[in-house]
Amino acid sequence: MKIQRITSARNEKVKRWRKLSTRKGREEHGCLLIEGEKLLQEAIRAGWSIRSILVSEEGTPLLKPFAGSDVPVYSLYASTFAQLVDTQSPQGIAAELAIPDERDFPAPEGVVLLLDALQDPGNLGSILRTAEAAGVKDLWLGDGTVDPHNPKVVRSAMGSLFRSRIRRGSLKEAIGELKRRGYQVLATSPRAEKAHFDMVYPEKTAFLLGNEGNGLSHAVEVLADEQIRIPMPGEVESLNVSVTAGILLFERVRQKRAAFR
Image (cartoon, rainbow, N blue to C red; front, side):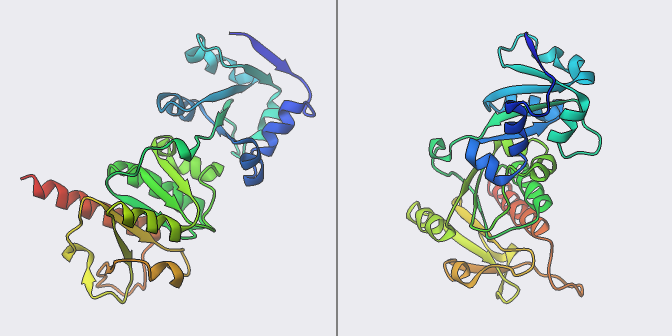
């Protein structure tokens, strides 16, 4: 493994990596920057393309698992490395990954999550992790939803991002496509008559979840085939959207297991 030394923070490669801290930069270059040995190993296991590996001076020993790799490796001063990552205590190793092209994804299968303008990175990361735990791979992120390659999303997803098939764009178009494929689209609403555990979920179910503060937009909500609610005997008005996702997904898991008993 040949390690190339970069000594200037004004190096063109450093400028490129710095741009990856923004959504605009990630979309421009089709790449994201991840930090940490564990996340890098998760990305490799999931088959993501590694464009380059970056280490700080102290992070060189972390390269040992990648000794046989032909991926370009760059060593940076600790101060330069710290400028490229957003953690308070840099982990010493990072990598530039190519973002998969969603046009290469196979058709959705099983349960699908449709997310309408979610804005909190932690919520999206938690949903990705919960979805993977429930066996769900396909997610559609509507307009206004936080970038799934935001560093905070990547960290909170803890590797689940790399095993998810994430599509982005108009939920109206996504719902139309899913319905043509035989999906039933279900929206959550506190006004719904049917409780989530009284609904029998078909194999092709798409759950529609809304924005943290405003819920589902009317334009999207009216496209649902049916609305369901999660009964809440307590005084709270609503649940965190990631909690809602977990309740719905694992009710679907419970029903599927019960059907095979």
